[in-house]
Amino acid sequence: EVQLLESGGDFVQPGGSLRLSCAVSGFSFLSYAMSWVRQAPGKGLEWVSAISDSGAATRYADSVKGRFTISRDNSKNTLYLEMNSLRGEDTALYHCATTAVISTGMYYFHYWGQGTLVTVSS
Amino acid sequence: EIVLTQSPGTLSLSPGERATLSCRASQSVSSSYLAWYQHKPGQAPRLLMYGASSRATGTPDRFSGSGSGTDFTLTISRLEPEDFAVYYCQQYGTSPVTFGGGTKVEIK
Image (cartoon, rainbow over all chains, first blue to last red; front, top):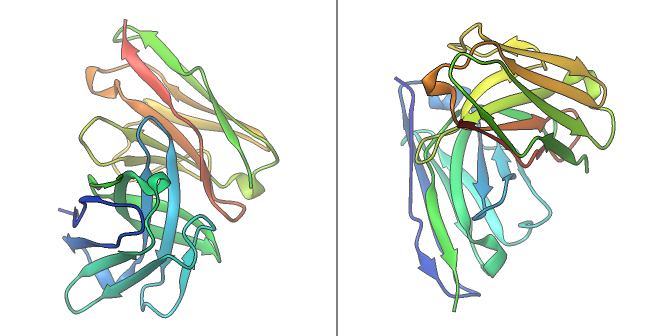
């Protein structure tokens, strides 16, 4: 059974930092590109970042570029999202998802986790 | 970026009825690269359809997708109790990928 389990979400002040993790099982992690997708309260879904299967290529939404860093450890079957300079608008439920890559920047998402909540507020 | 508008916002139907969900794009979606997801509260979103009309693994055949260009439709032929959820469309033909705002299918 495919499982993706996010963790690391917390309450943090504006300007703060947080590191999210996504532990996966039930499939060959190193064979899949991965993404983070978030959902702000009462809003729709927003793609945040993607990383290739090897970790060599990464891509970010303009809203997080320069502040967030995606990475992966294929030996630990774990995906990460390092979040710095957090803002109120980053408040959201963050999902990790396996990613089908059509071309650069063109993805859809096979399997998702339930998400971890990040709240940015003073 | 491509803006996706889903309608209606909420669909109130009874089990056994047919549901028709619309997703309209602000510009043409390349190669019908459109996906649909189902999301229930407290659960992980689930991929239902991709390529506008291809069912993902495990998607029941009561779900069908159609459309091209700027207008896409997800149809649920006969609603089962487990189908009441929020449905999102997503285009992946143009970077950045974008999602619609969702249609909630609720029990009437």
